[in-house]
Image (spheres, rainbow over the protein chains, first blue to last red):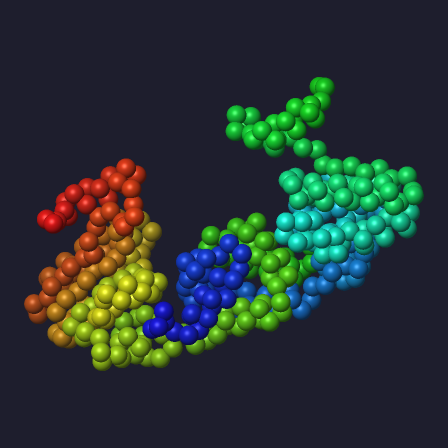
Length: 202
Length: 202
């Protein structure tokens, strides 16, 4: 890259720090940006700066927001007695898109992972227990990702709630089973076992 | 996305304009940027702005550069009698990495594509012919991409040179054949045909 202009090399380097972006992809993106209209590139750069300047975490649910509390926590139209616990802000996005859930959220910002050294002080479990001990909540939906770390995290939180919270509290998780449009033939064993266990009369 | 903070939605939108980046990837990148240190995000934004401000096209070879003529064109140590014709600046990068080629380049900025309405006025063919008519060049290597559009472009340039340039000029293309480390069993027909046609005595 000796004869490559320094600003090009710099942009390739910065882009290749993004997740899932290798050097080849970073080069392609760099040349795309080089060729794109000036104001499109400027809008991208400004969007990056603005997101860092204006986004904070909600002091109640820890979702990302511009205002504290966030629009969901401060919306009186939402069920105040239900909290859905998710790993990441992206999960809130996905659930909101369904339009099915009308309660509040709690974003853990990760899942417990003893192998990777992620313990309970690294994610927002204690903040959740504190919210629950206030006593207004009647259902906690543990919507961590299906898989080892997510399931383990949900288990730990369930145990914490059962042993520490006096109020009568329903603790649920999302249903496991075959995804819509999937092919039984290609479903993995775990998914198929859960689908069988969770079968319903029709 | 109604309850998503506007700066987040804006960054997702700008990122999803990049090639190969869908909405899901744009969301992942956005949340990565949100979580990355402030100065890393600022470096990325600044690299985008700087590349647009400082990069120009070399008036001789049309490669990207900060100075005109570019470092390759203005390097007296390079063979001035050889021009390697490529489609994109990324191709110059790839060839330079081999360290094998010591001559000059000419970047077409595309390939002829009648189906997509890309004609000879849209890429830098006439500029190449003008360079060649100056008479100092002895070899033109047509290093367009192997494939319909690249081969067609190389054919058109070859015909133009043969009919229009008086000076004796060697016109070559890169060898076609099996890539290193590939598996004969999985090679496509076209590659295998070219490899057979181009077989060499050992």
